[in-house]
Image 1 (tube, rainbow, N blue to C red):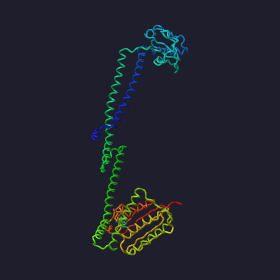
Image 2: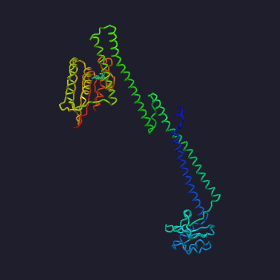
Image 3: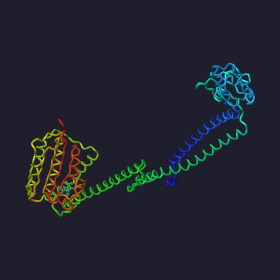
Length: 471
Ligand code: ADP
């Protein structure tokens, strides 16, 4: 695990490398562009400044062209010297400053026309085509915004001093590049550490969870993508912990539920084998009853397991809901009579025929009626009401009783597996705590809802809502 304590891992190094790459590319581009610009500006500076009044020559040439409309006889402009100021009068207007001769400028200034052909050259290049580099480095001569020619300078080699100046510029660029690179390294490291630290915590927590330590949580951090990832991770860990807790409880509950009937069967069979009881119907019946209990428990567990796996097969067929409810109520009348409880049904007349698994729905009604009768004391009432409600005419079924009711804090749990209000009493009554869990699964498999409302001391109502498809 030593790797996880190293502040910068693969991602961090990539981030720093990306930072450095951007800086190196940026500095390189800047250096190349700055060098090019500096060199050409420098040449231009020498061309303009070092050669004194090339600008003035250019102005004189522009003036000349403006007046003549061509470069014919332009040599005169170059050949005129300082003393020949009178020449200015020939084609110049107003004061144009000292006019230098080409000789005096100590250079070999040449002139190319608009198409780049040399029209004047002290080295006899007249008539040749100027190279594009020459034209690019030359001074354009503009008349009314149109380029009518280019004053060409000579490609003077840079002096040692000039070169030193350029080297200094390059050094400055290099130094600033190095400083920027160093800063990028530091900033990249800080940024990388701030990004990778929560990721490393997440990885450590995920590894711990993989090893079964489900209590792992990570600090929520900033409200950014990593923060959202941390929150999602915590929710996942919470879900896993709950699922694991549920699984453990289920296994413990199942073992517990199986133990009681098995113990009874074992004791009973041993007594029979030892000859303590005769093997007659009276002594074998309890074994049969416990076997039936075990069978029911296993069937219930199987139903829940199928529902969990989404493999609960419903055999839906058009079912007359009113008839279904009335038959169920009729079936429970003897039980109600025996307990001294009044069992009634209020079934609306406009109930539809729904495509239901009648056997499963009967099972649901059985669970609700069995519970209602079991928890309602003698003299109480149990009423089943079925009607359509709402604009879409949903089917509502309510099983109300006048039993003890369910405390508000228990209401959310009554549909949990193996949950029982008063454990000892319910177990004595034969309940395993799976009834409502199964009923809920079956109703939901039909696309409906099952919930409970209760006023402790006055009774409870279990509601079922079923969708009615539009015809
Ligand atoms: P059981 O097999 O124990 O009845 P159920 O899942 O059917 O299991 O019910 C779970 C618990 O819900 C019961 O133990 C009981 O505490 C409570 N309960 C269910 N129906 C009623 C009711 N009509 N009145 C009061 N409590 C009820």
